[in-house]
Length: 296
Image 1 (tube, rainbow, N blue to C red):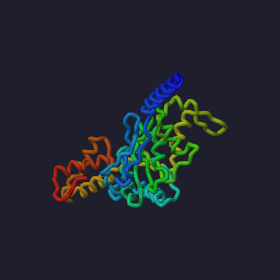
Image 2 (cartoon, helix red, strand yellow; image 1 turned 90 degrees about the vertical axis):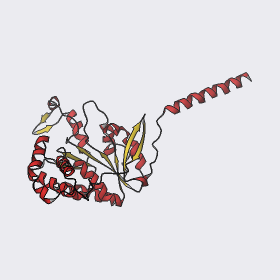
Image 3 (spheres, one colour; image 1 turned 180 degrees about the vertical axis):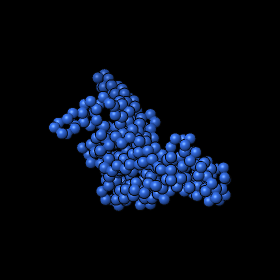
Image 4 (cartoon, rainbow, N blue to C red; image 1 turned 135 degrees about the vertical axis):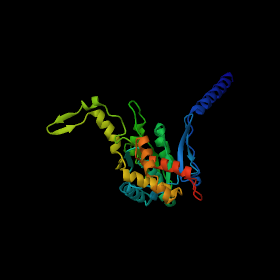
């Protein structure tokens, strides 16, 4: 009888210890209300992750993006294939800052959300959770783009390994309803150092990069489609300025008189980019206080 009592106490203590241990484990991500939005953000708190609905996604349209027609055509075709259930590629958009990379991804969502496209934004620091996110999406009828904006990795960071695995490095095949679209100012996403070039060897007439460089290049190569963006010319920049001024309700007379101010604005910012053009247009439109037009 004493042995039976001791066993019961031991089992009770074991259950209590197990309960405390289970309380420390991260919770499995909960399924969001997929009907609540077309865009979601992956959020983290105390090792617990969940998808948060974005109630008011950016309303930018493909028609608002000027002077990047080739880039628009390539990503639109790829996304069109994807939402139609045909083979499509993960996309890496690289190049000049403020040239429309992230805006293009947002515009693609607005173009195809009615056909079942959904977008999930994941910060670089949370890429380690990509396998959990993909598991949430597997088997859903919607088509999902996982969006990583301004993606790059510094020396010592390891989150890129999770990205490589989801792109094309796991024993499990990636779900057919998930693609990754990423933007970056770097083509190879990771810093390259002069010392690494010393590892390069020559075999006959062929150049063989060292292991460190091969590791960095291999991440970018897992994106099937590379789309490059370039600095805008002065005429391109002014064309974008004029587009946004018209969208914001500024009169043609004011637009015609604003060219010098627009160029000075770009000169002060050190960039003739779509972002700078948008910022100038907002500033001028705010001064004009146009009636009947709502600022975006």
